[in-house]
Length: 232
Image (cartoon, rainbow, N blue to C red; front, side):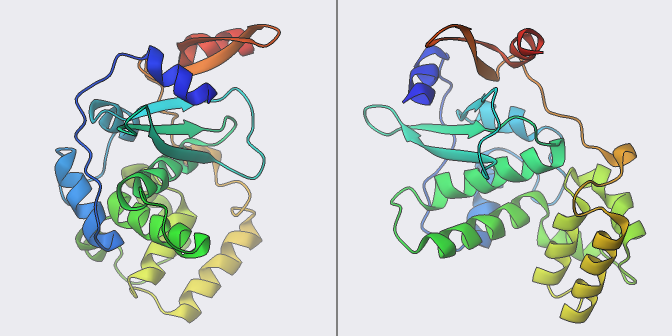
């Protein structure tokens, strides 16, 4: 409800987002085309791309319990796509969350299916949307190691863990190699925190808004950067 009220305060943009009944891979490719993105290149600023396509994005000044984001179609006619993000997440994780929620918006507008299946489909959508198969088969050359994946993280704006999973999903690496790489992530402590020198910057835009408490039970919507300055 709060998110819908915030959405009503933001000047709407023409919607360039389709509701699809396709498999996750096809849906991700169609959505890239709808957004005017290259079919096989990194997305420099995902937040900007979604906002230009008419998606309202808000960042809450709180840490959502065990949840990075949620999404839905808001408005009287359910024609306004909305994504709400939790605070306190690194840039690569927020980008994957945005792509994941985008998958829900374009594929699961009817909310039919088992929750576990819907989540898996959204993850597969995010994988193809952020890391297109054709590009991955060119970039993920053997031997696939943590060091080779670390070099790709800044290029694609995703975590090393996401790259490991994508390599496994596309059968570029074997299940045995996948488990080995995850063991190595744990041994380095990278499953909790990947190297700081590889951090992906947060995609701050003046068009992205956050609700800021100005007094009890009253919230003011303001640009994300300005809101963060007040909250700190």
